[in-house]
Image 1: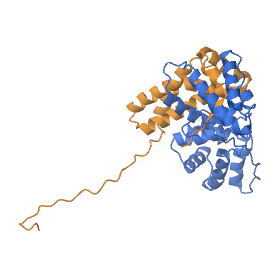
Image 2: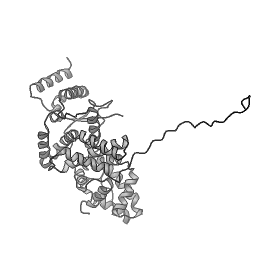
Image 3: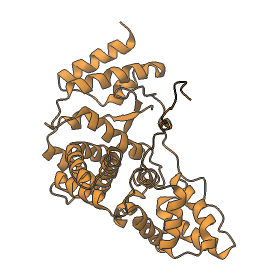
Image 4: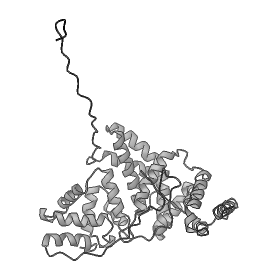
Length: 136
Length: 214
């Protein structure tokens, strides 16, 4: 699969900033500069990635998720976090919200599991006892 | 020394001295045919230069996150915001086919069975960025919220038009086998279709094109 990332001109600068600075820029962007918001959302979601991953793995394992289910829950939690951060600049702890959203996503009773992939094996051999010296 | 190398070294010098300019400034100084090469060099440098702030940084996880987030942000449609790509992504993560979403949406909105073809048509237009975000009714946003399990205020925010991203453009620097120049910005709106005469189809049309208070 070809994957293309869109490197923002400020990505490198943002990546080197501490959490507090990124959060301050994000709060300002949400309130005053929507066009500057997207690369900041991206940066915040990246910083919460390990929380989402750990939560989806732990909660997903407890709920009997397979790897594909965990990955889909991870993707959805990342999207949910980005979406929440787009509207709510009052969030105090982004990682705590990431954890909460991942728990919600995994626990959603309407969540559909990935289909089980069945593998077709060769037909089980039928064995029979041979009688007689000629093998018939 | 080629022009690309010259500009690249100059960019490194600026960055070392703390006088780095926006990446676009460097790219526009080389011919269009050589921008990819310069962008790759700069992306590689940034990747090696930046110390991960997060002690748990995990390249594979970051790559997955960037893929997911960028599929939504990069494919935004000017007039429909990021809602179309958000809906497509959520349908994947929730394992829902479009026809299932349409069927659930019809039930949630209390629409008659015969409105389903019109609903399917409008939903297709919505997913492909052809429905202006601000023309979507609150009732439809509430219905979508129930189906994709996302708060209505977040869907509303996602539907707001946004300007072009201040992005460098597609770069294959961090991708495995990526092809630059493959970005899709999906300019929205091929124009609002004529309101249909059929009452049930008209009801659907109003939900998608009638504005927030329809």
